[in-house]
Amino acid sequence: MKTNLKLALILLLPLFANSLIQAQQTVQDTLSCFAPLTGFISRIYPFNQPPFFFLIRTNSEALRIGDIKGDIGVTDNMALRSYLTFSIQNFSQISQQDSQVFINSAKIRLGNLGSMGNGVGGIYPIFNNNPNLPLVADHIDFGTVLDTTDWDAGEIGNNQTITPETAIVMDSVDINAIYTEFDVKNSLQYDIDLNKNLSQYRLAFSSFETDNDFFSDNLIFRGAYLSIPENLRPKLILNYTVYKFGDTDFDGFVTELDVQLVLEKIVNNSTLSDLDLKVGDVDGNGKLQVNDASLILQYANGLITKFPVEN
Image 1 (cartoon, rainbow, N blue to C red):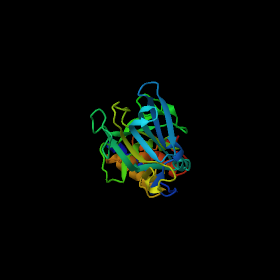
Image 2 (cartoon, one colour; image 1 turned 90 degrees about the horizontal axis):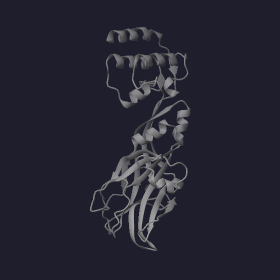
Image 3 (cartoon, rainbow, N blue to C red; image 1 turned 30 degrees about the horizontal axis):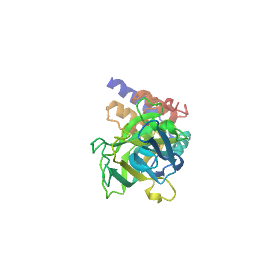
Image 4 (cartoon, rainbow, N blue to C red; image 1 turned 135 degrees about the horizontal axis):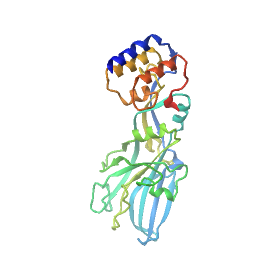
């Protein structure tokens, strides 16, 4: 098999031709949340008994997760979940320009505002005597309206859930920390690959709402309202590479060197990074093979204008 691959290398290399493609680049960026779709939903139990009703707040000063107890009108028990939306439409536009985006790193940063555990401020929430129940982020797609049906978005089996518990946001409180950050690299890459315009997340204590005791347990983060300082509003901090399919040496061009590099990696059974595979696997079968080198060669010679993976 290795002899055949080396033969392919010998046969293909003399046919190389250059084709100039827009330069590859790596970008560090910070995106603000989309305020009209960022906020929280309150599920309220009058007198701690069904039926319950909902209140929805977007473009709010705070994001709240957990439960609140006490004298709040006729309400004995309020459970809260928060929702984040980031506009990623620019990445869809990049894809339409025959370039692709590879996320090197991505994290959401929240401005800490407060916490309460068993009614005591500055303490991490304590549900059913569990002081370390993690706050999680669920990767969801609730669309262009936040409404009461989104309360269960993030649950397994819900049609708006993409990945439940895609990240652990926190499981303890540092009262001196200004920010809380959590990783969303894979979730963001998923949304970009599908050319979505929005990347959305729910913050909740797993599927836990409240422990039905008489003490408040909640976390509060800065919201997206204009009165909140810009640096404290929810942010998506990311590093990404814009690349062309077939540009396997990442020099910004598709040339004979890219074909040679693919064949050498195949012959040498080289370990491939995620980006190596994403750029070189131009037939989209999940592997780096001689057919990929052949297609890159055809593209460089102008015999094809698109790779199968782009379809």
